[in-house]
Image (cartoon, rainbow, N blue to C red; front, top):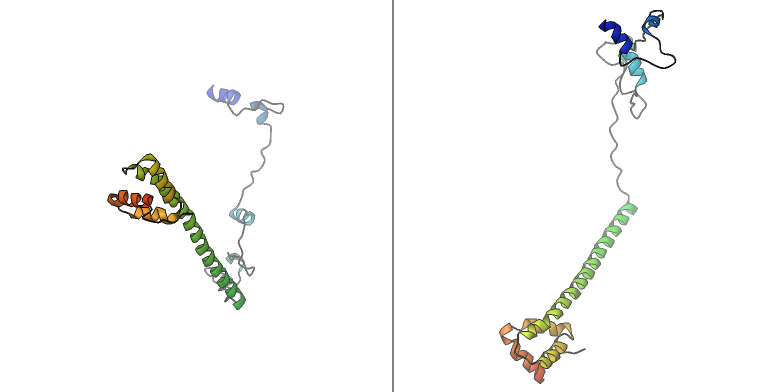
Amino acid sequence: MYESWQILFGRDRATGEVAEDAAELDDIPADPVETITPVDLFNDCYTPYFANGDPTFVDISTSSGTNANTPATNVVPERPKKKAKVDAQEASLHEAFGNYMAQSSTAFLKIADSVGFEDRLAAKKEKVFGELEKLDLQLLDMFAAHAIIVSTEENVDTFYGIPENYRQAWVEAVLAGQIKLKTT
């Protein structure tokens, strides 16, 4: 009964309006199955062509009077053409653009350096008061020395250029007026 039940309860059994049971299936004449040949598949597929319009694959079955092992036509793909030499106007444009890029690069480096310098100078100025606190100075003397030192970038560079063991004497000489520094 397994085969009977397989027909009745199979998982691929249709249940709609046009569903038929096993008894009705025997009355239907079988349609012939369409067979697909390799030629049909080949004709339905894309066939690439060379730039001159010749097909990439040569059909040797239609060639007449030739050996079956050789193609009907000798199809050789064309080599890609070499790039034409650059004319004088294009070369001068290329050279001008190269010069522009070199000048722009130099200008951008100068801008970056100046922005970086300003950041480094600001960081140095922030540390001046901390360095003055290490010295044996009165609070008002530290304020006065700080104001003088941070007034110009040359003063900041001079302050940091003095070795730490001589900074006390240098600051006292600046406050006493013995060393004149630039002020803005």
